Amino acid sequence: NRRLGWGIRNHRALRFAQGVLTDMSRAFTKERDDAPPPEPVLVPRRRTTEAPEPPADRRLVGYGAQVVVEGVGPEPKTFTIADEDETDLAAGKIGLDSPLAQALIGARAGSKVTWHRPAGDRRLKIVSVKYDGPA
Image 1 (tube, rainbow, N blue to C red):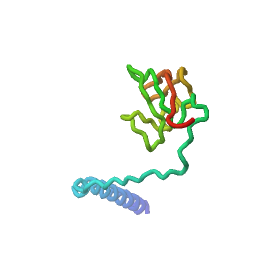
Image 2: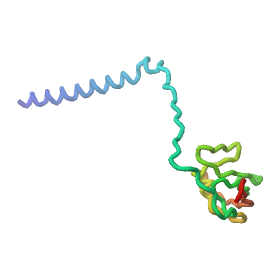
Image 3: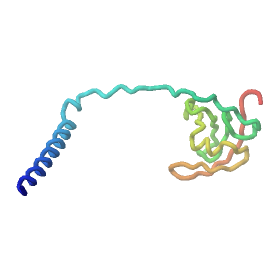
Image 4: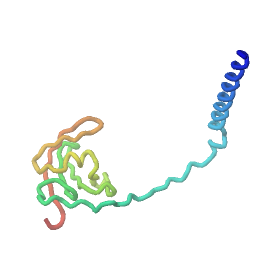
């Protein structure tokens, strides 16, 4: 009886080990290495809400503002607060959800804000705020 119990435990251990080895051998087969990578699927984000309106007080930084900022680099830089889908750093468009935009929104020209970055916080000064179009 005692020997039978040992045999059942050994049998279970053997089946487990065989399953692990089978799974491992499948992971290292040449067929998987030669398989082409799957094609990426790009799906445009569906807009659930309309783009936000610029603030009534056009002296405040908000959606659509062109903001000149000191402290980002050696020279003042101009950024436009844009929708997340319109982000283009080369053109100076930053998304509403970016840490830089979050630091600027609600401030006005002459204000100093803190930009929280992974590389460390940086103090910025807002030189000017302007909007295109009617107020």
